[in-house]
Length: 367
Image 1 (cartoon, rainbow, N blue to C red):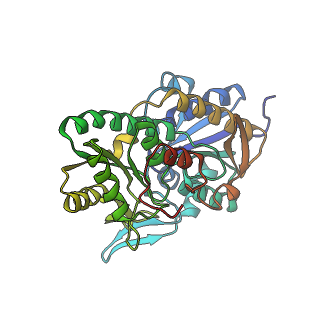
Image 2 (tube, helix red, strand yellow):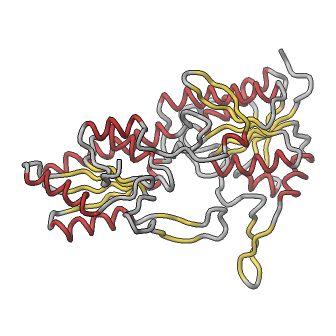
Image 3 (tube, helix red, strand yellow):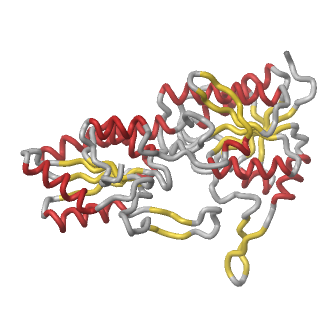
């Protein structure tokens, strides 16, 4: 049934880019026109909502973008309207530009806003909903750390890239009898490292949720070497840390809502292993490779389902909700419930149990 109330919607992609964003934009735009709605693509995430950058999207604009990585609208992780950086003579000053975002929303005559993004985007969307915007959320994050959905799109694509990298490093590690340390993304949640390490046959997986013991890491690689397995693969999330240690901070950017930029744990782990065991060790940092490129078929399908369900929610005026995957079904949950706490890896996680069963070490004997 066509909507008689919602005639014009805005769509934006907030936070970091990832494969599947364009598939969601396509999944929103095509059925929106069937509902008789106009679609405005807001450029560069919430930044465009504050600065007034938007363009109308037609079917031709979303044709052929299903398998294209990134986002045709652009994105930004520095565009939080409630944490807006401005340059002053004394340096960067943080101000609130939420009223300007609301002004543009009303000025464009939008009846609803579909916000595609991760935990940070959903927090901003929830605040904007409290100011009167009609918001529908679509969960995107390669970290897979939103509790309300079984999986976020982008995660499968990131795991595919990381697992393939581990596969390739296996051959060079075995040829040169080296320990290969692979650093993957994962600030506070270790889902990428866990799933990629399990899929790629890593020998050690180090994640933020389980602070690790150096001695257990050394023992694992030394034991493998003594057994004639003259190489080891260590998959480490960027937010992993040793017991009584801290995450390694690469830089601090005050323009971002979360100013901490991580990086360097891979090289640190590599150095410590080589010093303690005298075994030759090398490091590979995958970085933004995990965000780039074409989405996997799984993410293309999930993104399309999310996008089409989001426009259905908007048409039915079911606002303040986020689409989510529960089992094999797409449902909706309150945005405020979706951001109540992060989804983190636990000792009871099935992938952890399976990993331990096949001999993978997490550098900890506490579970």
